[in-house]
Length: 325
Image 1 (tube, rainbow, N blue to C red):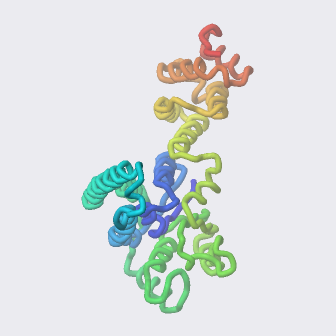
Image 2 (image 1 turned 180 degrees about the horizontal axis):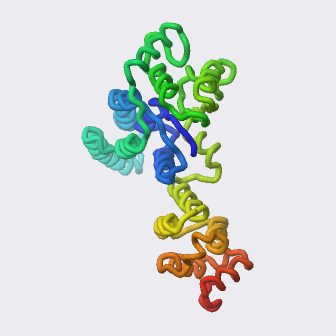
Image 3 (image 1 turned 135 degrees about the vertical axis):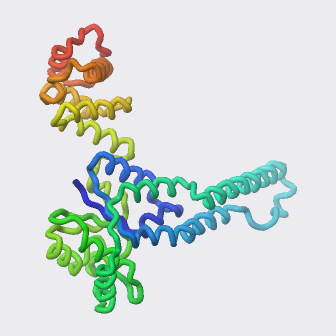
C-alpha cells in the first residue's frame, strides 16, 4: 500500500492550464479503488480548495479571454485577394470564442468543471484528518519557532504537517506531492528537508518522499502506466492473479469483464493464474469464471505462451479449432 498526501497547490493546478493533466487525478482515483493507494488529506486542504478555487479558475478564464484577436484589420492586407477569407475566419473565431467562454463561465458558476467532479470524488475517498485544537496549538508553536514547513505569518503548511504527524500512517513511507519549497531541502529541492525527514522518521517510524508533480510520483511508483484506464486494468489483473479466496476471484472476474484490451504480459499472467492459483482453478467450472477464461483464451491465443496455451486449453476443455490464431 502506498500512502500519499497531495498539497493544495497541486490540486489547484487542475483548475489552471497546467502541464499536469486531469488524467493524473484519474490515476489516483483508480489506484484508490484498487486499494493500492491511501490518500491522506486534512480539513485545512479541503478549506483551502474551497477558498482558493475561484482564484485558480479566474487564471484559466483570463487565459482563454486573451485568445481574442486584438486591434483592427491590417490596412496593408485589405487589397489582397485572401483578405475577405481572412476577415470571415476572424469573425467566426470571435463568435466561437464567445460561445466557448459563455459555456465555460456557466460550468464554473455551477461547479461542473471536470476538475470539480474528480476532486470532489477524491475528497470523498480520502482519509481526512481533522484539525483539532491540539494540532492547531502545535502548528502555532511551529510557526513561532520558525520551523518548517511554512512561511512567516502563514500557518497552513504547518497545520497540514502537524495533522500528518498526529494522525498520519505509522511505520510506512509517506509520499508528499507539493510545489512548495518549504518542504524541500535547501541543498536539493527534489528531496525532503532534512529537518522534516528526521522529524517524520522519529515520530512516525518511516521515510517521507518528496515529489514536485503528480506525474513524477506516478513515473516512480507506476513506471509502466500512462493512462488511468491502464492503471485500473493492471490492478484488476493483479487482483485476480493474487486472489486468495473464491469470493475475491468472482469479484476480480467481474471487474476484468469490463475491459476489452490487455497487454501480452497481462494476458499471460492471467492464463498462468488460471492454471496455478487454486482459488481460480478449483472453481474453473463456475459460469462466470469459465465464460471469462474461455472467451479470453480464444481471443488471446496468438499472444499466449505455447506451453500455457496447451495447459489452459486442457484445463478448460477448449477445442484447438476454436482458437483465434
